[in-house]
Image 1 (cartoon, rainbow, N blue to C red):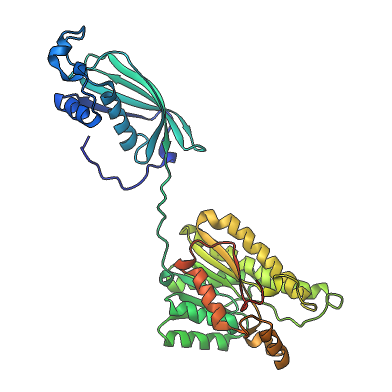
Image 2 (tube, rainbow, N blue to C red):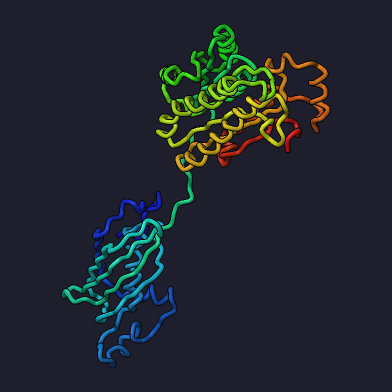
Length: 402
């Protein structure tokens, strides 16, 4: 065994099998005994003084029992289980003395393994050159977990699909991601001209973008769009922004039909679900991914009247976000939501100027949000800076919801 061995990783508990054995041989020298005595301060003359030892029944210097046990610890820490192992209990019996010059053969065998407690039980047997057992016993060893994290792809190395990206928050998000080096797939349903123009702008700014058509409510169309993006960029989509939303005309629930509610659910929830299902195989393949669902601050606190179908759909989208975050977190996929307040986009184009000003004055920052401000928050969640966030809902609304 080398005096020092390079350790690169903690041993994998799952690879250790009951019945597995490791062997090691060591000839004990006077230098070993002297070094051990200097290290521990154990200068018992039975170990260190040949004249004293000759006056005992042993006739010769006896090797420290714990020096022999220390080689068992070496095997535990270096070979079985290996790096990251720590004794939690030992039970050794010294059946016969060990003398300087003895050739010892160590045998370790795994008798039990517990994945729940990350422990293994080890049986130990040490024999001298005459085949006589000099030490035997067993012990329990805990295998510590490494706190190091696998490297994830930088934002600039990722591929993103932004649904409903031909205008508004979606378009701003596509441009913001592209500025950070993300290769973007701009999803649209009908607005092909706007999507192509956006891609032209992104490419003109030095970014990468392609337009992909798909109605997000159509699972097959979404799958085709995802495969188109993968074919274009040579790697799977590992950033998904579910921004697509259905058109909505405010009305009370008493006046609304179930079809109007279902229309909202179909795009906001079913569409997001379809997109998630399409991208997840690629994300799980790399144990890394970012999903951001675009909700609404209207789901925070008391919702306004006449917005029932919209709020119902966005609330369901939030439930989907939380469920996916809990399920996918152990697989390295972060799932979050941003909930914009009233934002200066085409979505509020029919809202009166008076209502816009009133909404701004009721906001602590005294202004409505912009699509770029919402997009910057999405970029944050998709970047390395948001690596320890999952299952959060960030209200990007200037403080109107706290």
